[in-house]
Length: 210
Image (cartoon, rainbow, N blue to C red; front, side):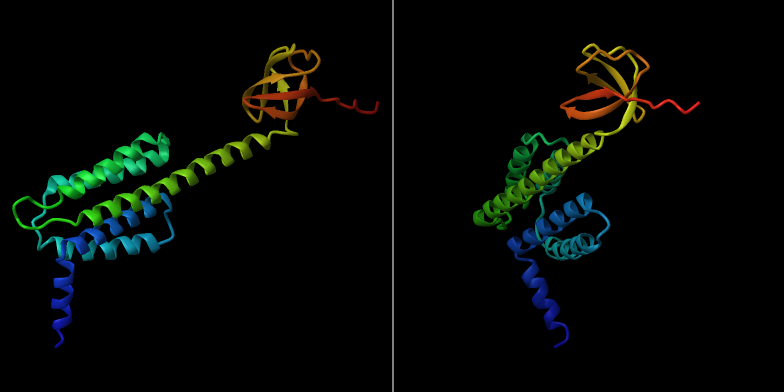
């Protein structure tokens, strides 16, 4: 009786659709662990799902070309989260479908359900599309936050500003614009960030009492 549950589990996992789903869940969990490291939960989920997938796939006629295409599709998804082109995600979805169709050797009587492949492609595209939007939003927010903290910062005009020039603020050089001419070497304060330029005014220094 003790071994019956193991036999039942192995029979369940040798269903190609089940093994494939666990494989994808493991790959998705790996992707989550790579993009959101340190939590521990995605790593644990990836290990469990990939172990279950391996138990089933070990008894199935795997086509390693198809498996390689699936892994390449995952890499494309992850790369697109960094470069944010959108085109790589489309290529990854196509690769996911092709790799799924080729996952098992032809002529062995084992194949995935087209519904499972289609569902996996739709869910994968949805998950990574959602992650893609979050990555773009986070990048824009970080850029916006980083530049807006310049408002109020002081620096020095490295060239004459009439009406544009260059200033050094927080050890960085910025293209600056001013309403009135500012000589080089004048202390300035950032009053606004306008795209890639900063608007500055001269800093009035109060001379020390004699």
